[in-house]
Image 1 (cartoon, rainbow, N blue to C red):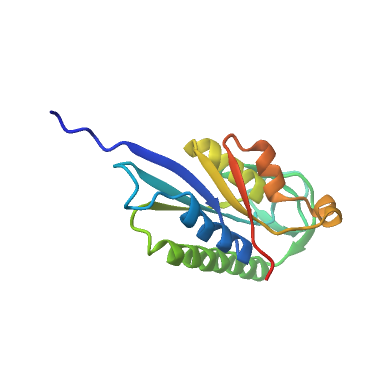
Image 2 (tube, helix red, strand yellow):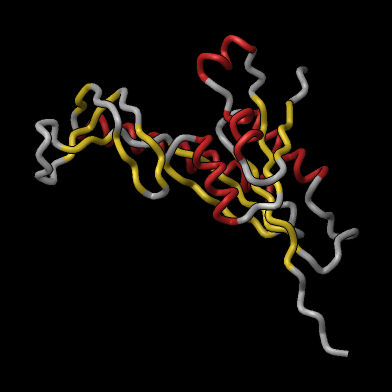
Length: 192
């Protein structure tokens, strides 16, 4: 008989951030969703760790001319378009030093979050792990990544905000559960 090519496993996205809720969701995913090496067939799941860095507040020249200069703004709203940010509202100008400092902090935080998540994944050789750090609003980044890689399932933690807080700041998990084009599992961390 001819050898049967290894079938492709599931594509599982786990949304991670700097909260304990996403760490718990990743650990839960390994305990409950990712195939263990003893029970799995030849298919190997791919786990995609997704982190959304806040968009840098950038804006073109304030006088309406596009002379190639960029002004850095605080308090801007930026609509996420994959790999391109479109500013929709102006804010307060910051110096290059401040924006460079904010960007460095954002990059360092992303590195820290991903390092923590990858350390959890180290002990699981039965799964292929990919990392995606994208700039933009977490809701849009996660749903866009689901579409791009044609994910089979999305796993994410819940911060457990109450009704009032959710009404004002929104809920990433609520948005994704309604807009992601795959099944979504929202993992709530037990209160200790």
